[in-house]
Length: 293
Image (cartoon, rainbow, N blue to C red; front, side, top):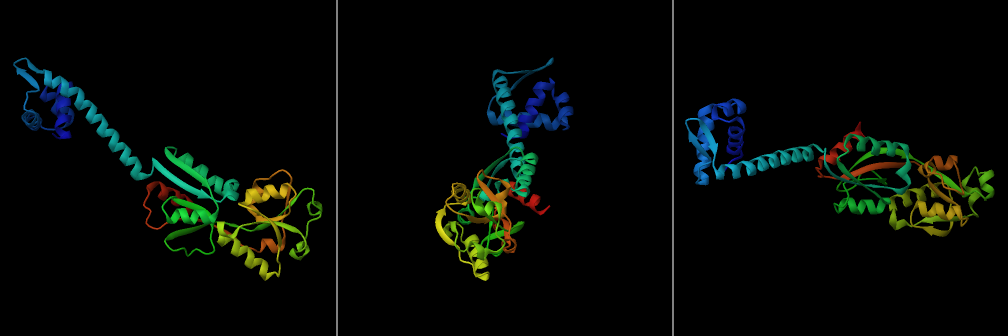
């Protein structure tokens, strides 16, 4: 049994005759007749009672008509669904983003444009630090990540520069530095710092540490936070000061003052989009095309 035969059969039923059906499906009448007879032969039962006044459905024909319409309708649904999946109009896209950059306008615009253009794609966004993102990308648990990398050369991954960030000083609003910010890092030598763990984002940690070493600056770390949100929460509580990505200032937190410093502006913190080499997801391709645009 072929879909073509079912299509011709439904056309004959709905048009009322083979000649009318042949015009409807744009196929010669003998070809339609032949396919109907082949269908009856395969099913081993007549589908029409043929007489001088025309054709009428048999009991088997009436049963097949309902099933055939359902099958043909389901077939069109499957074709449309697969076509949408193949072009990235539907499907699923999992994206990791460093917590700090959820509110950065450049990133927010990218996510908004993607959602507007592909509203039927299930867009899953996971706030993750760079280290966990790398692990998930390599384990095929993320389609793409927006993260810090120490370089664009990442084994097994493809990368694209998205945004250039730098560092910024965060102090409690009750700190003397809030009203009279420092000009040089050396002025902060005796301050208590809130810092992050290296293992959760080694590329970011090492880049910042190397920058401080070039300036002969060694922060006195007394508290640790799991991510920048935790670090800033501790700063707001007065547990110390912190140096964080400048993108943090796009989402102001109560109790904190941000200050730019020339020596922190010098620390280039490139933000990358990365995805696993060989990931052929159409939904991912559409996102990458937007990044490239």
